[in-house]
Structure formats: C-alpha cells, structure tokens
Length: 62
Image 1 (tube, rainbow, N blue to C red):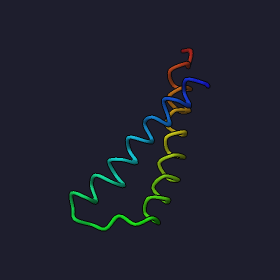
Image 2: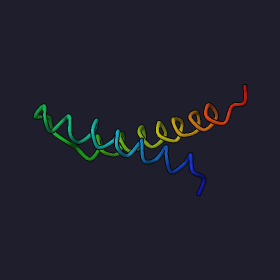
Image 3: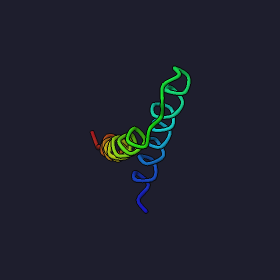
Image 4: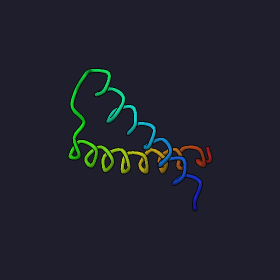
C-alpha cells in the first residue's frame, strides 16, 4: 500500500476517535450509529485528502 494512504487513514482514524467518540463522550452527548457512520465517512475521506496533499507537498521539487 502506498505510504500516503497509510498516513492519511491513520490521521483520519485518530481524528474520527477524537471528534466522533471522545469529545461527545466528554460533553455528555449521545453517540448514535448515524453519527459513527457519518464520522467514519467524513474522516476517512478527509484522511485520504490529508495524506494525498501531504504527499504532494513533501515530494514537491522547488
């Protein structure tokens, strides 16, 4: 697997845990299946975008 995909999905997973699980638990909000599914989709796509843009920026030749 390409390194940027691993990096992006790792970042997305950590953001998913923090934003979809930890913060709502801390605030006393209910965690629903819909919230988990939407969070997984959003942070999965966001993580891939993050990994891809980091790959482009790090491999850019001046």
